Amino acid sequence: MQADSTARRPPVMEDVARLAGVSHQTVSRVLNKHPHVSVQTRERVEKAIADLGYRRNTAARSLVTRRSQTIGVLGSGMSEYGPANVLLGVQQAARHKGYSVSMASLSNVTPAAIRDALEHFMLQSVDGIVVIVPHEAMFRSLRTIRIAVPLVAVGFGVDEGLSIAAVDQRMGASLAVQHLVDLGHTAIAHVSGPPDWIDAAARIDGWRHTLVEAGLPATSLIRGDWSAESGYRAGLELAVGRTATALFAANDQMALGALRAFDEAGLRVPEDISVVGYDDQPEAAYFVPPLTTVNQGFKELGGRCMQMLLSEMASESNPGGGGSSAASVVNPVLVVRSSTARPRE
Image 1: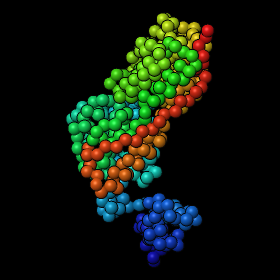
Image 2: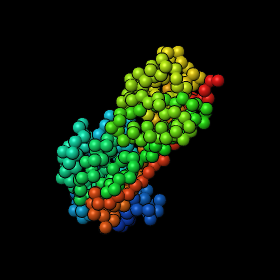
Image 3: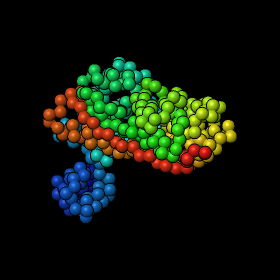
């Protein structure tokens, strides 16, 4: 009769413990990824969970812990490669820590829209919030908002009152440009992202600063919009002028467009002009030629976000999202492939 009763109801933690031959506390430690559980015991518990089809009762757990095990992620520009992969990195890190993600994407970055999205998260009782901040307007609004849960903003720079997890975009641009300088290039153009994007502005600063430090002119700046089409137009412009021997594109998509333009103009890459991109998207290694680019480390960035959130959640002195500031910065890495070489004599 007991077996029939168990079969008719969803399995509970006591059933898992009974089947695995361990205590209720041991099952709890396995579920919470506690480090002090032997490999053999963990495997036995995990097998019992799989055999029974056990699912944790998150509602009951929330009543005990007063945690929803959910974080909110607010973003804009999510169709672009960078923000989309920041989101992916955060989702992976959250899942690894046992959290689910509630996502809100803004089509218009206005103070009212940001406040509405944050209020929506609070109604869901999220434990913390990550804001993916590509636009300066988002930063300005966040400075004026105080909420009752930890908040981490993903963007470059340290801002008083906000906790920031970021990739050092200036460093990434500097790595790209310095690589070209070291190869002997003295005329290095830059096709940038939109001027209201924080990352785009930081990459312009890195390009300009590195050229000035090398005693070279920083005059060949072409505004793009992240699209391959804008990179194509920039490439055609550079092909006509023939003033640059190298191009640093602010993302791989614009670099792709420039490669197409140079090919149509009869310019060989890297023999006639070198090209460096940014992002190291998976397709970059299969461009023609394979693209030298900058890897931002999105997976590590997502982990940093979760570490900061968990640290603030655990801190009894944490006063809320707007009351403290900290910074965790990921250093990007230059990936050298076949699209760069020394300039022709």
